[in-house]
Image (tube, rainbow, N blue to C red; front, top):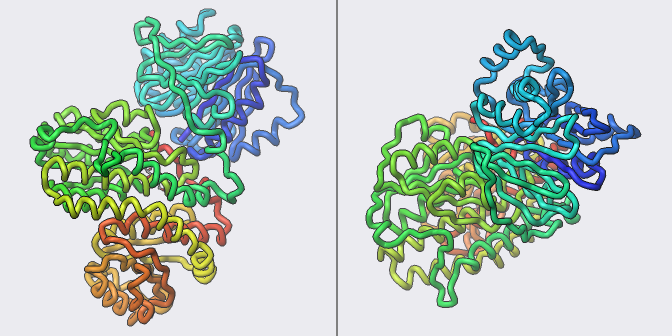
Length: 609
Ligand code: F6R
């Protein structure tokens, strides 16, 4: 969701900020804007739509400045429009604000500002309240005014503020929304995420909740709520600048699909000792801790939730502990049964998903031990967990998650195997067998990616479909959900996933001549059952694309098209089976002319409830 970039230094603020905003496009947005300080005047330019619209609008204008803030907005309060776009100005035009998050008491603050302070609002946003509030408190000291305003603000936010009278500084505040500071050469930055800064700064400060930051060209200082300076260790970013570039691929999504062998390899091998045992960096769960645990919840949203479904299979099978998988937005409101015998596993690529964070806090308050599987280092979910297990996917830019998912699956297997060895629920032979299968996955993923052309050809036959069904059994059910989500989010085709055995209990009524069914039959022990399910839908006229292991060719007699994955143990098929579904969704969306990396209405990091 919304992205923030701020710059102060010797360079051209406008160009640097717009470049940074482009690197945050993946977060999802519907308008963009920039505020620059030119000779003690704040110049604001903002435009609905893509950053390119903003660039077109300001083309040829002299907007030279050495300090400014920029924003990509994902509408919450007030429709996407030029006027609701950020930055917002105070009534006297002397304060400009960009904001990511929600001000929960904005109605009350707006009333106070209107009735008591005579402010006339221009937009429908909660953000304008922040600008007006800081404007009301401003007496030639921006830091002081921001502190006073923040005292009144409730909600989750990260803000960046500049003042016309103080052309040397940006003040920023973080409360439950991401904010980092980049330390450059004769320049400093604020941003919502690392990709915005990769080209300019590799040394960063990760800002904590309730901290205020003041950056000038030569200094970046962090303060706590009581205005005491806080010392922070720097964090060195190891990704190269190319990590946030498309590198010749048409879309980030395709690049990220192709990065899966590497992501899986990194996530796995960094955790393996020479002898094959698992070294869980970031996890301090001992045998005693595990003996105390009688229940595990895996809680997440969207694709990360689907990774949790596979995690349940793995943990229950290897470690014999009951696992419940829950959608985060539901978990927190159903008074879940959690106590100090509960292990709560949060799965999140961004580590900033508000629903997941809120569920985590609910479980933590009730005494659960919190373990998180997160991709973004230093994110909120990571910071609030007792143990953090990082996926090594690298930055995921496309809104549709692909490589984060497969690396989350690897983390799930490693956690399950680690628990199993600690609890003694797995034999050495079985452990070695699964470990061997996991180690072969990067090569098998490479082999599988060679089917890309075949999948593109199948997509060419199907891209005009208006609805698609995904069916599977066992761990293929979770993969069906994930394949269906991928398709609907980037191609806008109405798709639906269901356990194949459930079809006959209602959904089969929808099968008719030409209905497209994608049947996942990767599980050896459920293969024959799946062939029967395929026959059932074929008998009602469905067109079936089957997915099976290379050696299981009987499916060719039932399905109209078959995509094969390399042979492997049933336990690890999810890591392979999802890839053809990602590619299928990608090519369908491409053929339909969709904006694949930035699908409509979606945001990469969902920081609102
Ligand atoms: C789908 C997708 C979303 C996210 C979900 C959770 O492709 O990306 O469903 O998986 O919004 O996001 P994280 O993992 O950042 O918590």
